[in-house]
Amino acid sequence: MHGTPATDEHAWRVPAARLRPFVSSYVGYRQRGTGSRPHRGLPSPALTFIVTLDDPLVIMAHPDPRQAPGSYDTLLGGLHTSPALISNGGRQSGIQLSLTPLGARALLGMPAGELANWDEDATRVIGGFAAELRERVREQPAWEGRFAVLDELLWRRAAELRASRGGAIRPEVAHAWRRLLGTRGAVPVAELAAETGWSPRYLNSVFRAETGLAPKAAPGTTLAGLAADCGYYDQAHLARDFRSLAGCPPTQWLAEEFRFVQAMPAELGEC
Figure (cartoon, one colour):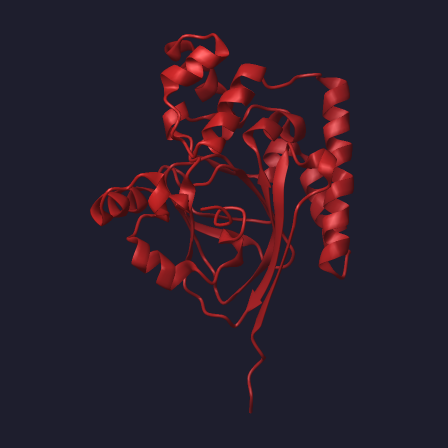
């Protein structure tokens, strides 16, 4: 008697153009019978918003060790500098949205800094909108329909928040964030400060309040540090930095994690 065939389905799309300042990608996944090894959620330049389609997402260890393990139908995770450990259990399905820190105010109505190094049930942050989003996505039979629902509801959400609050991230912080991404974190803080017209101390304070990280801790390089042009002068230097982000050496991560679609392509697409 044969068992149930394994499923390893995934889809990726860039959001509608008007949403791209707020969301960099949608990654859909449905996996069953592909193994039950836990998945490491690595630091990235994006907040994580996960909408599950079937089983809840189970987090065994959060970036902040003080946070207890938990399960989530919808999850919001802030920027972090250490990995999360996610249970697989042999099956998982959902859509991962990569929110930019510049889009946190637009879609969540709060600065990204309020979620730094923390994972939260999305309904505790954005209320019934999270449940509506999940319900509408689950009604769709195919990925394109699900992604179209995300485009529709997220733009409605952005319009409602813009009308009711009118808040926006300070342009100096937006400039600093884009420069850090564009240089893969290589631009000196003093140079960023000069470009914004602020002192390094003030830039550090405002940047941390908005994103939750100091400018030099912002994970602009992520796994792009594997590339030689990122300035690593020996393997040991790279391995130390990688271990601090992933909690394991690069070779172990590649062996255990490369098959997980949530790690691609938003975090792995550029080297």
